[in-house]
Each structure stands twice: as structure tokens, then as C-alpha cells.
Length: 239
Image 1: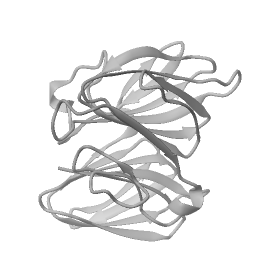
Image 2: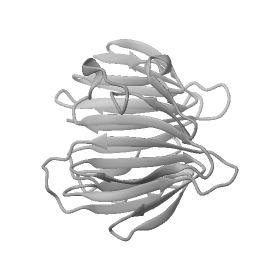
Image 3: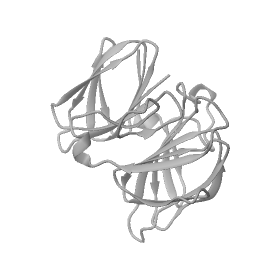
Image 4: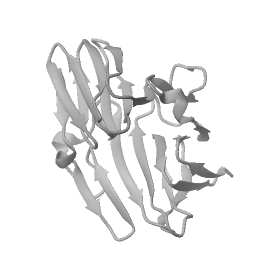
């Protein structure tokens, strides 16, 4: 079963310092019918203006994943971690018993666009931890690249939940297949470009900002259909 959620159906939050598109209930957007998808609690597409940011604030018992799409995002936390995350970087923050952090845009001229994803951990009260990694574009080209995983996948950041997160850049007319399992959920989000997805439910064409929420067994075919450039997307496999 595939449910397509278009870009226009997201909740738009437009503040002076940040523009956000919320796929699920978040902050001032409260919709009990759209609170989560399995363990996925938040999926926000943010654009942070120059020299702006989210000042130090706390979290606990969340697995927070950030993917920097463009620009630079500066991270600091009370575990002593400091990093300027370039475009192509993925950050994992396991909040556990508690972590304070800030995320800011250090550029004086360029916006920073990033995805922020919140997941429920498999259990509360874990020791907080942080990690980040840069993934070159060529590793994602016409390939589902695992960037974060609860299975200990080599090269991927370690998550505290049975979730696998993939990034991909799919050229026009190139195809990938993903065997979505009966007992699992799949959340697919188009970051840029145009993507065609197909399974027994039918064929759907997605553009930037569109998402597909998939349940039950589905042999998923993904095809790049952008007239210019590649289709970039994120795929989240979760319970």
C-alpha cells in the first residue's frame, strides 16, 4: 500500500530566520492524524538563513538524524562535539538521557538547507552520543547508499533503533529495486528532481518535496525521470 503525500500537503512554517516544511506534526503544527509513521516522528525540510540558527536547547530519548543538502551547518553540543557539516554530511545524535546542542548557519551570504529526522529509540535512557560522516556524491549515484543503520552496516552511522536510512542520486532512466517487506514500513522523500515509483499498487510520479509512505509487501521500482539533473531522494526503512 502506497500513500503519496505531495509537497503542497506538508505544513509550511515560514519564520524570518528559517523556512521549514513539516511532513509530520511538529512545533506549532498539531495534527493527531499525522503524528508519526511507525518510529518516524519528524521529517523536516529546513532552510536556515545566513548567520541564523537554533540556539542551545535540550533533547532526550530521540534518535536525531540531520542531512545537509546545501550550505554549511555548524553543530555544537555539551558532549564537547564541534563540527562544520558540509553539504553531503549526515549527523547522528542519540539524545538518550539528555543532550544540549545548537545548529547554526555560519555563512554570511548562503542559506543552509538540511533535513532533520526524529526517530523513537528502541529503549529509553541510553547514554547520549554523537557522530557525523561525509558521503561523496559518487557513492550515492545510481545506488541506495546506507548512511545510518541500527544493524551495524559497515560505513553507516550507528542508530539506536531498527531503522535503515539510504541516500541516492538517480540519473534519468536509471532504475533501482527495493524489496519492501511485509512487516516493515518505508518512507521515501524526494529531495530534488523527479522520481517514478512503481509496485503492485500502481505507478506514481513524484517531484521535489513529495513523499511516499509504503506499508505491506511491495517490490518497489524506483526510476529517475528528471529532465535535467538527477533525482535525489532519501529512503527510510523502519518498523
